[in-house]
Amino acid sequence: MHENIISYNSKNLIKCFTIERLKLEKTRRDYTREILKFTDFINKDFLYANNEDCSCYINKLKDDANNGKMSIFTVEKKYIYLFSFFNYIESVKLLYDFIPDSFYNHFRAVEKPSAPRSISSDKIVSFSELDKLISILKEGNLRDYTALMLIFTSGLTLRETIDLKWNNFIEDANSNIAIEFKVKNNEKRYVKVSDDMAELLAKYKKSIEPVNKDSHVFRNKFGKPLSGRWLRKILTDACKKAEFEHIYTPRDLRHSAAALCLKNGASAEKVKNQFGWSDARIADRYSYSIPVLEDNAIDYLNFKLK
Image 1: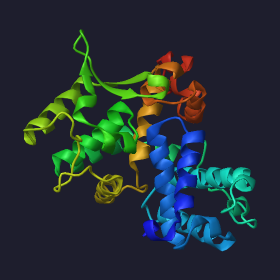
Image 2: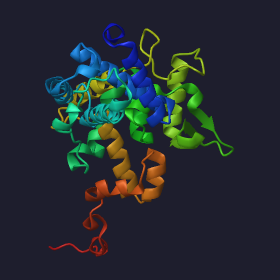
Image 3: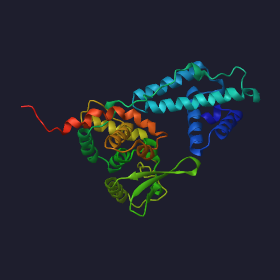
Image 4: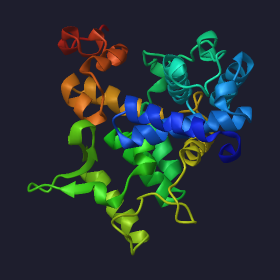
């Protein structure tokens, strides 16, 4: 729809913004996609968006988050994309005659959706709960089980998991299996895959052979990448079947992996590298799960009151 309601000049404005302000091609595509989604929602050129348009769109995204269609982290990211783009338009307004004089970044008046910065304990899957989840997921589709366990055992994000291709996997001289990601400035990030997970991936791969090394690892029956929404649904259904008080998300599996790594002695820097965090200080969000009383000197007293 946006092809018909965005002017040629507006399309070029998106292109100029992404080239001038964004370095990575993937990031450019992400911003462009979200700008066009917003345009489709308001059903007019974004240059003529008003306060009501912006407010209604963000509220719609919040509703989607409340209904489990996306995470609040995703809503916050979408808001930031649009806010940044509209700020850019304001900064170049005097350079282009086609931008209305009345143009204003109405996202300034919309409260920014804020994802929690600390990780609450109800976001961490316990070992007993994990056992139940594994038992239930193993009864279902091998693909879905493998994808969700890869998130938990390797700390991948949901997006990384559904975008994953077979050619991302590498093996070093010591037979360590890892997933190789390209990051900024052509640098690489390596996510180690546990031996158990490597075996599960091999089993899954064998079940769908032959596979193309350039194809996505997790695909639907039409051969297209599996959707994040589908994996969220599979996990939600498993949690309901297990009769958990809390419905976990794929992001919670990642949180749980990080918390357990830190709790069992991994350094914040090592966890940062594995999980792709921008700063090791993010580990502070999990400090509640490593209380000083959990492994205290008094625990070794080995004395019980009669």
